[in-house]
Image 1 (tube, rainbow, N blue to C red):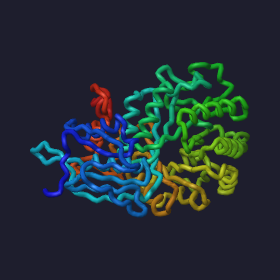
Image 2 (cartoon, helix red, strand yellow):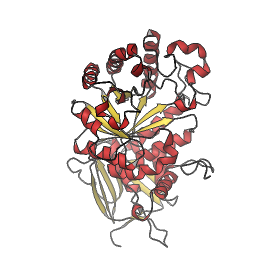
Image 3 (cartoon, rainbow, N blue to C red):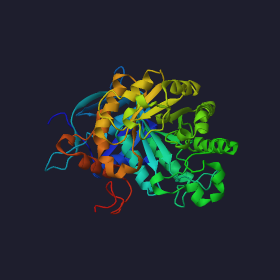
Image 4 (cartoon, rainbow, N blue to C red):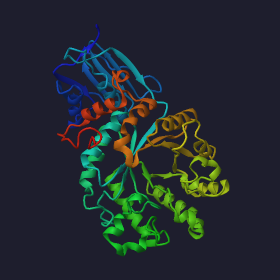
Length: 452
């Protein structure tokens, strides 16, 4: 076919100097199946060029423009994260003909815009995860053109201010810095999260574990009697939460958002005394985070009256009336981003998301891995021009990860040119293999550790 651009064994590119990163070059080598290397030399900001070709003009409303013809490859972008999304789109267009080894990209002129601007994904770090697993996930999310990753450590970060809140195999700050650095190099902005109401155990309730109390039972006074939530009547807890945030701000240097959690507190739903104080707790926490220069983010299930969240009434710990909900929201910092996880419906519009939209706040719809539910959230957010969409992954990420392929595609992500001829498991396997620059063994390859 004429006008194809063939990838040479030794490729030279002129690009934004921020692309002169070993991982970015390694990814080129992986997506050319180790047949080509790339040397990146200094070029203009927010551009990438291979060959004798001019950078395309960026169309209005687009993040990047990608041009490929027989003379070369050129990408122009509005900023660095968009440039990386263009770079990944280019990598995913590399292909070969059956029976031949030569790699090429067919001619293309791609002007890329996304209907949903904030495309976030929430990643839990469990003691069962390795550092390599987390890095692979983060690279995959960047490849699939998500914009942010919310990182929640389940007893898996060694805090100076709360040493007991870490299992023995928790990551050091230097290890977490590697994750953050890689995410940003790939155009994915990391968001720190620390549960500041319930989920204070740092472990799933089904496990019976509590990272702080199993390490040091003398810390019992920091929690509600069942250990599930922080005792926010204790000013020592407020000082501790502030110290934890300070450590995370330093670690995630320059982060724009901070996720406070705020979901599923049994005590603050069932205890009349604590329930009355919930508005004060949420107001104080969101205002503290805002005063520290970050946009607070919160889950919204605690603030849904039953009629707004009827499909999940048995799971959510909600306020009892619309009036209660409105009054609490009024007290929260005005910069708060509200995230509504609703996992039970596959029909758009998602009623609870619309409920919050009508209150005039920045709201995100959030799904888990159910594809129909994700599509309903995405359609609701896009049609109503809401703040964004968040894909939550929780403890089922390895088992359910193939569903990220259709979900990302629905969000507008580029997939391999052969995706229509394969299935989501094979697509995911190939993508993970290509983003893994480290040597793997049987248990660290693929997306599940064991076949049986």
